[in-house]
Length: 331
Ligand SMILES: N[C@@H](CCC[C@H](N)C(=O)O)C(=O)O
View 1 (cartoon, helix red, strand yellow):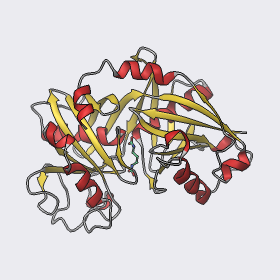
View 2 (cartoon, rainbow, N blue to C red):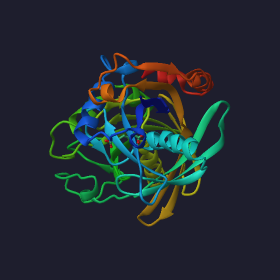
View 3 (tube, rainbow, N blue to C red):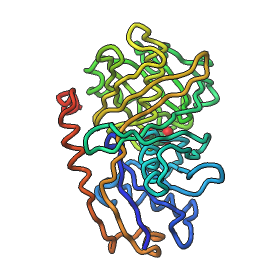
View 4 (spheres, protein in one colour):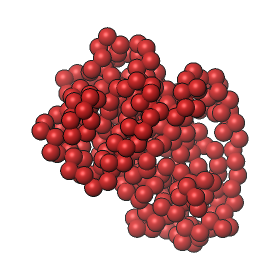
């Protein structure tokens, strides 16, 4: 039997598969086909998910994480997913603080004991950070760097910041009306279809500044569409917040970033162009799924045994205590 987990960070949902527990590892094409089928919102397992997290061995880290978006595309990083992988590896190995190998970097992760009552929390490092056009990549925008800039080709008035962490993000600070309106979806769809500006697509986040060190963020994700939260998006947005709104945010200060699925804490560190961001939030396991390995290879879940962990109840009770639930309902 193979074991899968359904996990989430701020209700950004994934299926987690540890390749090291299989008799024979799944190849890349099989993993992509499995991801597309299991995450499908209409026909997938447990209502689908936003993507798949593949755990594997790593020579110089406790484990490795590969991220596959719901559409089958590979992602360089996933902040919410990394917290759930950190939890999985922490419980597997007994380690509280260790490193996980991701596509471009070995990142530090650690257990956070006091995130919220009944809600396991983890802290993860988001890096490397780059503003270079080639790192996102972007083109045809008459600039080599986008920080607090109006880009008439994208919108006549919004001020954008673009940063790779190392997956690509485009951020604009907006009023709450634009969080709920059509603008984010239209821009996200446009920049994730064939387009001359972000040829590999981009995660687009709109964020409202709710007070000092406080944001509400909503993301249209590359390879997925709207998600309840994007961890790297909230980390990248926190960096943009520090750089463009010094009256409300600063380096080495904790930010609270609310999102449709919950809340995270961020802290931006570094200087010059050398930044990294700490992302702290829940790492919730909602289901354990046992499926014969042969069926897993065929993405056949007809005989899967699914057991709820009960953690969803504690998480929902926690989220109900958070502010901005009226805004969430309007989104
Ligand atoms: N939800 C994730 C990001 C997942 C990858 C993204 N869609 C991409 O393709 O870059 C997060 O929590 O960071």
